[in-house]
Amino acid sequence: MATMPAGTVNGTTPDLDTPNDPLRPLETPRLRLGRLQRLREHMAAWSVDACVLLDPINVRYATGARNMTPFMHRNPARYAFVPLNGPVVMFEAMGANHLAEGIETIDEVRPSTTVSAVAANAQLDQRARQWADELAGLIRQHCGNQVRVGIERVYAGAAQALQVHGFTVVDAQQPMEQARARKLPEEIPCIRASADATMDAVRRLEAAIEPGRTENEVWSHLHASIIEQDGDYVETRLFNSGPRTNPWFQESSPRPIEAGDLVALDTDVVGTYGYYTDFSRTFLAGNGQATAHQRELYRLAHEEVQYNTSLIRPGKTFRELAESAWQIPDRYFPERYFVMMHGCGMTGEYPYILHARDFDSAYDGVVEENMVLCVESYIGEPNGREGVKLENEYLVTADGVENLTPYPFDERLLGPSS
Image 1 (tube, one colour):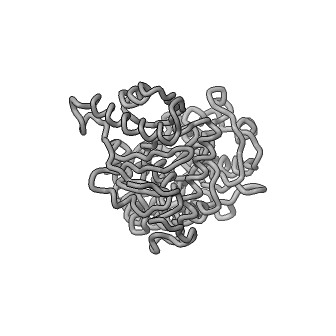
Image 2: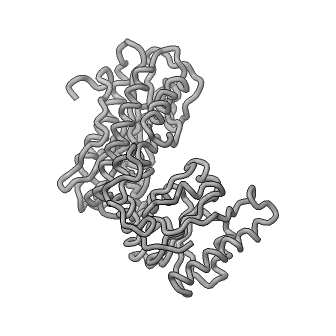
Image 3: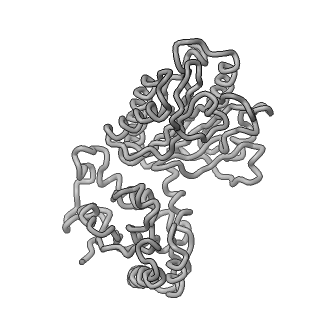
């Protein structure tokens, strides 16, 4: 198939602000072309001449093409070739070429070569060489011979087969994460739309919290609302109640919720327009009053989120944030959430900002305007009955932050004055 310059469809330049699909008015050619250009800027900064993207989230960021995202997380059945200069080639899964056609970021669509044991069995290494040979032809044609090629999430034999062609194989995730970290102006309305839809879904979930209903039954209300609002999927099952709120990371279960239980969730929604919405709330089940201990846990978690949020400014380093952050009381520190803040975009992403006491194992960096950061807190003590999870998602502005997830806190746990 003949190629055309990126930004053209059937030889013509589209209206950059007119969406291909009127049902998704914010997903415009300007958005897709801007993300591709941002990726190429960071490829140049990392001296990467071409990327082969297999992570379906990264494929969508770079091209706008979507196809069975959760399935593709475990099956390398589609991938995108993105050179620093030259045509973007989408290798689509068998029978799905039409999903990538007509997108201005994609110059050519080809059938993919799936390099996996389930697809190739005893022919796996032969399939890997076939995969590498086709890509090598593209790389030589559009990038040259002695070049650096970024790849990700591929069978080791496929990476080795690509190296045989004389290329230096590097990690594509590094420029990719840096590209995604600072949001384009066109991304921010999509992020707000996803956050609004997710808050609507949490309202539906909160209304369903009744003693006697199981965690799974209540959790299903979030999923249903997300899909109804054209979101993609919920990435985790972090919804729990009562003694299952401590320690954190216990997944939704058939346990019936009891009156007086704390009920906690982390949204982890890949939502509208493919953008991630990540905030946490803890509620009190039933019509009773919270115990003094429940209020204490909640007050501390709320204080941690609010205090750490107040520190965020463009130009601050990650270490500066960690060293000036709210101090988790010693009795709760062993069960702390593993980061104090993290990036958010099409998934949870760069950066991870660790607590001061953990920072020797972390990396430093600088907060930039138009990053989106999630500020986390989990307060629960080892062997305690319950814990509280709270989190908000913020857009970094020129002089501070904008709260993208202003979902109400539970007044019975916090009090109406907060």
